[in-house]
Length: 272
Image (cartoon, rainbow, N blue to C red; front, side):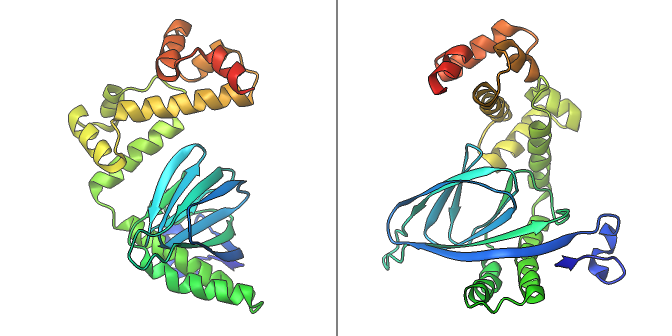
């Protein structure tokens, strides 16, 4: 276990009010020569994934995240993920290979993290991960050394997080706000007012970062949560609509049917 204390770790002096402990748990290296489906897993701890070759499509709580060589992802606990590993399309056909390291963290203070974060150009993470994996499989895992190596890979992500542009930071803040306020009647106009930006500018910044308009992102997240509530709870359809910000049940029914081709009640019956 590594514990950050302000009087020892001076580079974390600004975070002295929120001490943090890191515990390395396990490391593995997965290699596939052909397209392979990865079964769904529920995470109890943090998971760090570094793709050294090929392509990996992660599906985190229903949201698809594409990883290519050199990408690093950190996934939060209490999420489910599955995936599809694709072989490399390069001439040497070396397949897909990626490291997975699992760790616990008492208080993730390194950068904002909702369900997951993905970083490009994280090649610096491969060396400590390779050493971490090697020590783990050989049974030479000194607890403190492995915790340090785990922390080193997290530092790679932290450095990349700090290199984002102001526009990327703004887009991330807007996304985080949407995810934390899905139960409110959100619109592109209301978000522009809340963040004190021109609606068109905010829309361009958001789409450049996430590949979707603000409206489409809000609709997609609300719809995903509505479907989850319909299939994992016994909430009445009207209560689901109210929870997600619709005061008019008919509007919610029309919205859901427009996107799913069936009413919420029909959807619930189709999957149960």
